[in-house]
Amino acid sequence: MSYMSIINCEALQANLDAAWSDPRSWGGMQTAYPYAEWINAPENRRLVVDAVSPGGGKLRTVTVKGMQTISPTAVQNNVSNPNCAGEGTMAQFYKDYTIDTTQNISFGLDFNVNDFIEACEGNGAILAQAVARLIDALDERVSHLIATQSVALAGGWASTVPVESGTALSGDKLQITKATPRNYFSEITKIRNAADESNFPMESLLVGGSAIREAFQATQAGCCASTGIDLWEAMRLYGYAFAYDRHLIQAHPDGQDGAMIVAPGALQLLHISLAPNLSEFGKTVMDAANFTWNTVYSPRFGVPYDLTVSNNCGAIRLSLSFTGKMVSLPDDIYPAAHHLSGVNWAAMLELVEA
Image (cartoon, rainbow, N blue to C red; front, side, top):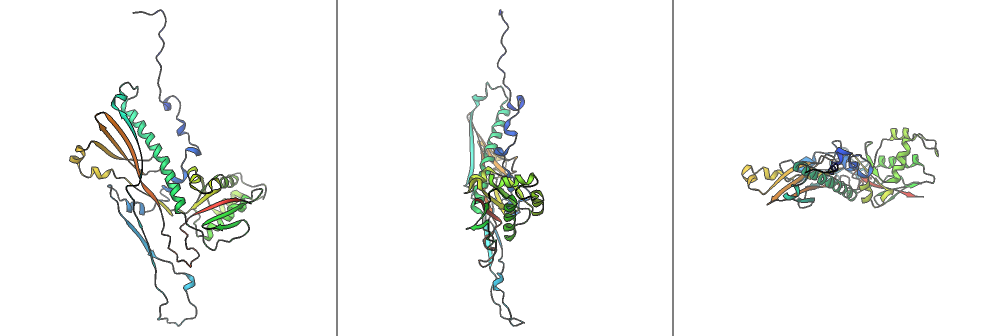
């Protein structure tokens, strides 16, 4: 058989990463999860996470307890010394921490073995890409869960926060007024002063929307023309970390004008992988199953996801699940009469128009 012309080349297929580069890996604020990454960073993680989920698919209820701070107003003056008459009793606080394993986030993909017959790529490569996309989907949902539950867990500010020109407390929320033109030095110092009054450490994270992002972007320019203040030096002196996070903005009732301040360790993400429970039964039970159940870890957050793979006569299903929730410190470490009552070192703030 012969042809009178050159045969056209067949259509070529190339993986996006191999032929170009996948823009999903380029970075950018709309695909970044800075707050969720900070929550899961070693600097923020505390032992309660491992105590609740010690491994092997096992779950514990951990009761965190301690003695409540004595209110300074309860201390008396000019009593007999030695004083043999006690004036009060110690109050103990406690809070239980565990996970409801029926509450999870999950997504699955369905294939048929016939779908792979004419595919150019190897079956293993196709499944690896599918798992990668599942992890991406769960990462975004976990980031959203962390932000939404963090906002719900936020406590208050100290009752001694100075209410002055440009600073107000609206319930448990700090409100900072934006001057016209913006006075970034005034804004960041009012936030720092309120944080100091509420006993937030210097390493606390501020995470929020565009209103507060403008103030921190101005600090990187070194100085603000409206005040002549070296904002970069102010940042060095007062100490902040800031992140713009779109999921926090979505969860915050004030949107782009809102923000949260969180002390390291104040909020924790409890999580558990249930998959090891199956392998703990041993080979006999594992061989009897019509599915595999394994743990994979998010490359972004390091948290465990349960990967279920089933094959029912050529009908293949992959599903990925996350089980966990956000928790906060006990909210009654201080008595009601104390100026730090209600502070749990995660607090809301808002920048409002003058």
